[in-house]
Amino acid sequence: MKLPFTILILLFGLSITSNGQNDDPSVLTLKWTEEDRNYLLENLIRSKEELIEETQNLTTQQWNFKGSPDRWSINQIVEHIALYELIFMNAISVALQKGPVPNFPHYAPDSLFVDQDPYGLKQNKTTDFTKPFSITVPLGNNEGQDNLTWLLKMRDESIEFIQIDKRNLREYYINFGPNVHQKCMMIFVHTDRHIRQIKKVKAHEKYPK
Image (cartoon, rainbow, N blue to C red):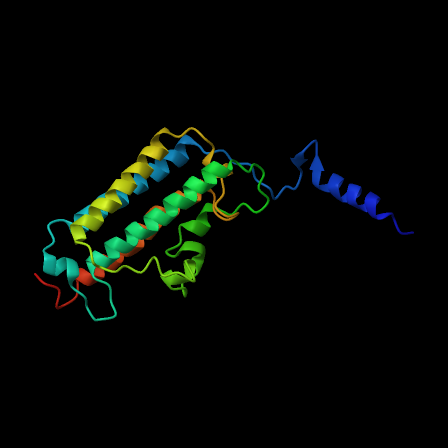
């Protein structure tokens, strides 16, 4: 016997919700803990300090050295980190303005965002994440130290945000993907990857001494 469509809808709704709550055991409602806060602060500060150390007292020639014409200079790498930092911060700001989404049914594990490449897509180029635009491709027109100053200003604002915010950052989502806590993880993971790139530039046999 076929059930009326309206009854089917009601039965389906009852299987999913009870008093407005999702009963699916795969749905997680996690809190943003002080341990989470300290984890982000430790790594945002650590990666900031490592970047400063790797770019300290560089000459103009060192800032702009390229191992080959198709490679980025340290200046361009730092500019790229700053461009992505701006993208990350904008995404976080939009997510916070949209409001929390408790009981989000597609909660991803933190481990997905500590990979060396955001989303685990190792074959993607940096421009793949901003198509059809190439805003993450650095021009290298600014002085290297200026790019660093710009980047550090934004990083300090991110650190201050993590230090003082009281919201559950695991309930705010960026385009139904990572939550704000995970997006903040991506900030330092992205920086770490490009610090390794800077070290490779400095290890080149023709790098100015």
